[in-house]
Amino acid sequence: MFGTDTRLAENAVTAAKRRGLPISPDIENAAGMYKVIVDASHDPHPPRPTVADIPATPEQLRARIEEQATAKRHAEYVRSVAADYHQPLASAYNQAVQAAVPGWIVSLQPKFDALVRALAGQAKKLPVDLRVEAMDWNDARISAAWEKAESAAHQLDQLVSDRQDMARAIGGDGGRDNELYAVAKLPDPDEQAVFGHVMRDQIGPAIKEWKELRGQPVSRWLHLARSPHIDLILATPGEVTERAAAMQRWRDAIAAMHDAQGRNGAVTAVRQALAA
Image (cartoon, rainbow, N blue to C red; front, top):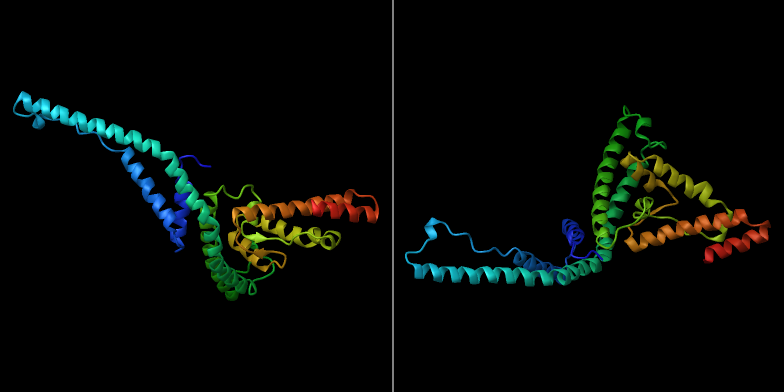
């Protein structure tokens, strides 16, 4: 998938180690072998001779030239053979890391949950309007709650950044809105929710406010932690795709409802859209 480029896999491993997650023997072994061929590909030629290296006799010089020629040929052969191993070993390392990424992301969830609970606890002490400019910073209770919420939000940002480093090793999360789907699961659409305008009246406004709070990371996290329509659950890249697909089913079902003729036609159209 990434050819001979192992940088994304290396970043994922660094993030996993930073989080204290287990690194499998397969990854450690593949990394060790990859290092061998990287080192071998830089196997140095013998150094160029200086005046101090001139031997005492012509015979000794000839022997030394032959010796260094042999060493130079050996270095070139080592580099050439190491280059032959570069592609398969890089692929083996990338594949080993890719296999570990979903489990690593799942392992981040308990810490993520703890930070979300801490954030939700402070959210109860803060006003409904979470915009920074709307806060009464002269109120000591608000300032204290905000300070604690800021600490949790900062840790969440760091954790999500590590999750993103892991996710990139298997292709990343995709489009812009997937920033939300990477950490939040929305309700799946069903017939009752579509006709009850749950997206229009509840989920949609929650997403809209999250987008409007761009640039205010603490407020954004507080908003997500408060929302009854959003479950904060870390997603693997594959789960991000599923969450994005669920949102598309919402859109398709709502469009089908509006385009249909009559109630019965709308019900049929919505059912077909949800089953697609």
